[in-house]
Image 1: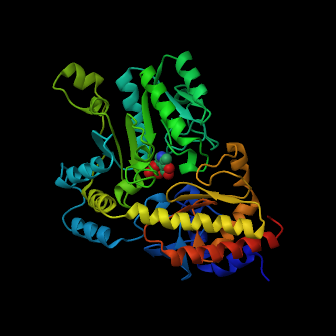
Image 2: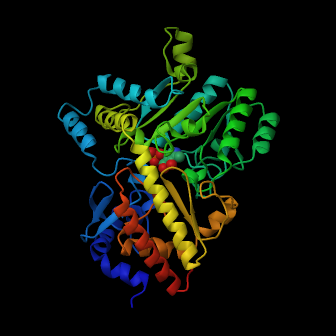
Image 3: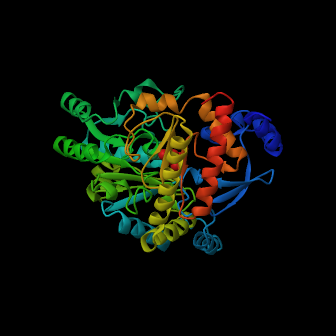
Length: 444
Ligand SMILES: Cc1ncc(COP(=O)(O)O)c(C=O)c1O
């Protein structure tokens, strides 16, 4: 009986070859740090709906879901048609287009707190701009960020995380104030002590789209009250939760309106794109006023070659109009609920330490027991961190790939509206078999 690792290597020789070639071209053979895997990552050829295929011809049920971008699954017919139509009409017209107007209206229709917006090419750009807008609007310099919350890879976003950080000037972190997530007292203390705070940014369901949650409703309402009282711009980073936590994002699900929202992934219908939107008077810090003193000195500058490009706009419109008009979220959420219940049932039946938690279509597996309500995990963030970092989780991810299931990172399932009971039940069978193999190797 081969080990999980031996089976992985034997099954994926095509990927091993691609990796050898890719390693000559890209650091670690990959183009996104999260795709790095040992002994080599898998190389894919194409996807359709909830499934995708690798270079060795193996089929996978996909829970990476385009790093969260594909709420509609791979190559949804409406998006394929919209993009095909647009690509023949031009991908960059060097001017405003009707498409960018329709795209903006589709966002506003789902997220009423977005009064005005600007488009970007990624979530990283969106959070960079949101922080800058907060500073320009308030005339203050600092941003509060919650420990371990992820807002992309620009210098400011990288503060307060456990990632390596060479190449980032210490000065850029001097303007960041890091507080522990979930602790309203810590935020209040920071705001009372420091009068140079412009904004507070967070992932509204907890770090890594809810892997490290807090008491979401209470915390978000508390942050809204505190930031309003102190005149600080509240920024929800809804790059993942936007249109996934609910059709109107986490802000709609929990009834708390931020001042600014950052978006990417689903908003762009599976193509590269992002946006920052919110209160008109804040976003209008970018607007020209016809007053040289303002336009040349105080206005926030915002270029960007591919901002609002018509190809992404076409995909974004198609995606958001479907979310607005069909039970897309309900379908994804129902399948995620089935998956979560099934995973918890497996842990209970096999008496293995572990549980699954999460909201909407974002499910996290932790190889440790917890008596939480399975939506908001109550383990400490350190404990969760520890539980998802061990060799058992690496073996689980690898074993699931052997069984034809690809999960996000090493522990998350991002479910799309195209996953059906068939995919979920197949996934559960694969999970149970993999867990048994992990246990057989003495890892769990
Ligand atoms: C919450 C959050 N913010 C920002 C980003 C950065 O987005 P991008 O990868 O498009 O730059 C991500 C990416 O995963 C994210 O999860």
